[in-house]
Length: 453
Image (cartoon, rainbow, N blue to C red):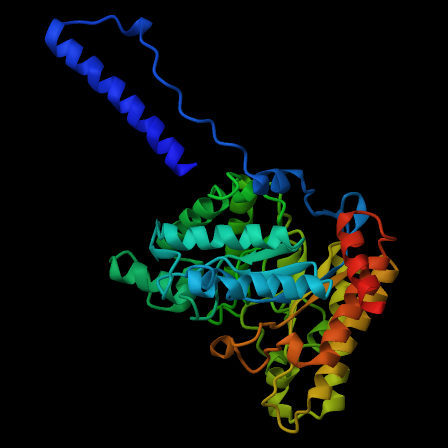
């Protein structure tokens, strides 16, 4: 195709040159009767056809729906997909990860759609983007679609990894427009909020170079997440963070009304919550919610579903909690938030991160099996009765030979057969709740049938 287009272009240039020569030699020439050779018409991308044909996931009350049926998510986190899709030598990791997820019947992957000022940065400075990295994100979206996987894409980081809110504050400070050097000024500084809006608009209206479809029109993306684990420690009232969430969620929806939107909170109850909910907060979070307020945050009209995270090792560290105590907390934490979705919010609740650290004192791999099962069982019981529990996402999965991206919670499914079976089993029983209706459910059930034969 490239060679043919190039030859045609030379013909066009040749005719144009002749016309110019005639003009300068004989004066004005009537161009109306000169026909230029037409360039070859490019064929529509098969990726575009697939992207346009797929239905969007939507919310109806406290449930997610896909193609007219309830949609229950068994998902995973692989935050590194865009980064690894940049260089040709590492792109195979992305394909292998989606293939591994699909083989376990996983339907949604959560990943980063940000990298601000770091290595392989998407946004190299405010409003300036690296096309090479944008094309990497294009590849991630297409590769997910090829494997029947949808994406939740996070738009910023509260932490410093991959730039985060710290980088935005640094940019404003360096340009002499920052109000404060505090990281929390990300949420209230007008200049920084404008920086972020430019990034949001650029990302949402990005036209995928492989499909020709703008991100805001691509159903492969299930949802946008405003920020990974937003916290504003300088305002424990929660007002600063609430105002930012309201402003940014409204801005996203003004550009993209097709996709679902979530905040990205961890689930900590705040000042507006009743005491029985505050008592659910773990450890030091009982007295310090870090500016978040789960129920208040999730009630924002433009927010479609609530998210929670779950890390009992970290959150109960100072309590020196036993395995049984951690397990009790896990069940209570997930059940409490699903209850909020049912009774208070009328919105779905997804556990978008949960993990158990291998560095925990007395850790054994079997502990993860028990912990994961507790989360999965709670979600399944809710889904089976049509409740707000919409799914859970393991933090995090990787493929072989990716040790540089591992953390305390990483799991390579091929190296942990029991977890592999457990994750796949959850995918299968959630798919059966849809009674085999729709391509996604059929695809998952075919994976389940192949595994049982």
